[in-house]
Amino acid sequence: MSETGAGDVLARLAETIAARRSEQADRSYTRQLLDGGAERCAQKLGEEAVELVIAALGEDDAAVRSEAADLIYHLLVLLELRGVPLEAVMAELAGRMGVSGLEEKAARGRA
Picture 1 (cartoon, rainbow, N blue to C red):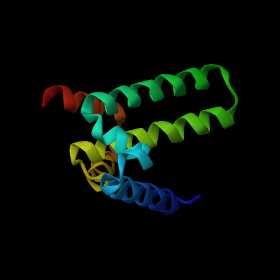
Picture 2 (picture 1 turned 60 degrees about the vertical axis):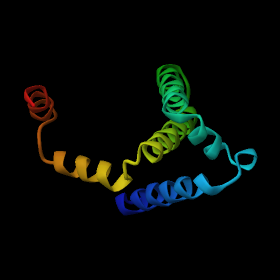
Picture 3 (picture 1 turned 135 degrees about the horizontal axis):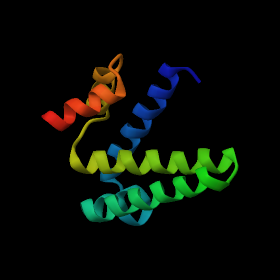
Picture 4 (picture 1 turned 180 degrees about the vertical axis):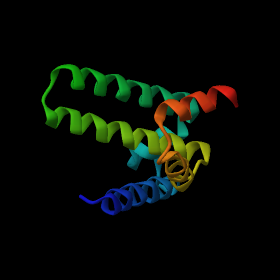
């Protein structure tokens, strides 16, 4: 999948998550997460991050892919809850392109 294709999938998923705000909670897991607030969404994101770490350390690539997808989904739910557009995150990443990771991290420490 090209970079554009991956961005398209993320954008479509973010749009779907936003649309789930108006679904009935008994029909939408996403809506249940959003109704749970920041604490619930952050908890799920953390759980998925741990599951990805565990998969990365000992499981096959299919497990890593699956857990990474879960992590990205839960990240997008948290962004939706907080009103942080995916485009803003992508712009943040784009602004870091071409900058050494060490330099970027050091600059954040000075800000």
